[in-house]
Image 1 (spheres, rainbow, N blue to C red):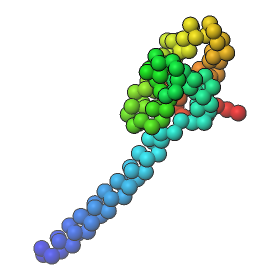
Image 2 (cartoon, rainbow, N blue to C red; image 1 turned 30 degrees about the vertical axis):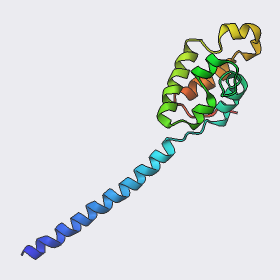
Image 3 (cartoon, helix red, strand yellow; image 1 turned 180 degrees about the vertical axis):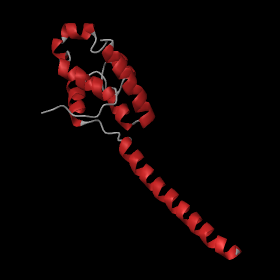
Image 4 (tube, rainbow, N blue to C red; image 1 turned 90 degrees about the vertical axis):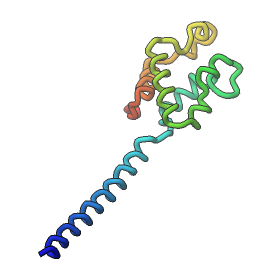
Length: 132
């Protein structure tokens, strides 16, 4: 009688073990896709054209480099990137970038509504590319 109960218990244990193993593999795959550190090409184009000049490791603008260094951003951990993206989003919403003083001498540095929206969407975590 005890042998009859042992077989179903063993089968149930094996079944539960296999379920747990396959679930971990699926979750690992989802996490790997979710934390992609690459900046999308359409966002990178705006950054390169409008932001990178003041916010890079070689910039003479010490204040801009201190606030945000795009070279450092790309090599930083995901948690730091997310925190920086939140600050970028807040700064853009408040209209603090590009600074008014900078735009007085370089009006071509002003973000177009489309460029602003691209940066806002990206910094808020939206990953879609603009419609072509």
